[in-house]
Length: 82
Image (cartoon, rainbow, N blue to C red; front, top):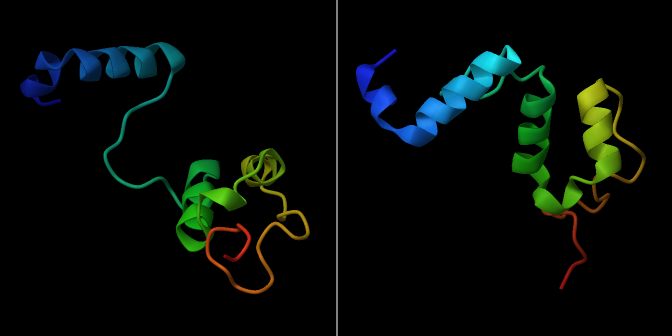
């Protein structure tokens, strides 16, 4: 760990929280096969409107996305066309 990291109170708090919860902080992207990695890929491809509670649950559990989760016409963002 870089000693400079300990000068930033927000970083110290995040490190402490990760330690207490048994996790770790990383600087790189989330692994593609993790729930966060799957959500990031979906958001990058289709925008934030596609991420509903049902879609997020499917991503977390590794299930297929629910029918109609991604716009069939290929629109970005999953919101109605203007």
